[in-house]
View (cartoon, helix red, strand yellow):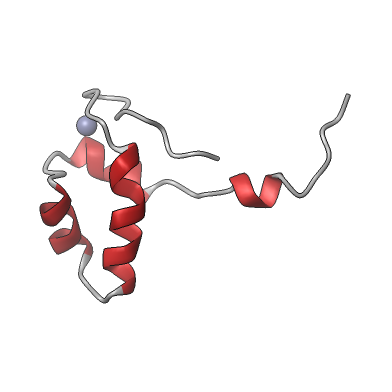
Length: 66
Ligand SMILES: [Zn+2]
């Protein structure tokens, strides 16, 4: 859905790093270098970014069930 604002484990703010991470990956950087540039050192924060699937745009095409 939407990227969580904070890391579930340590509470670090991660939502602001998601788009820059995708941009760095598109430019051809490795995930390791992208995480270092964004200041995400802990693996709990890295898994939040890596495991996120952005589904919100796909789900918004369907009407709400009432
Ligand atoms: Zn964390």
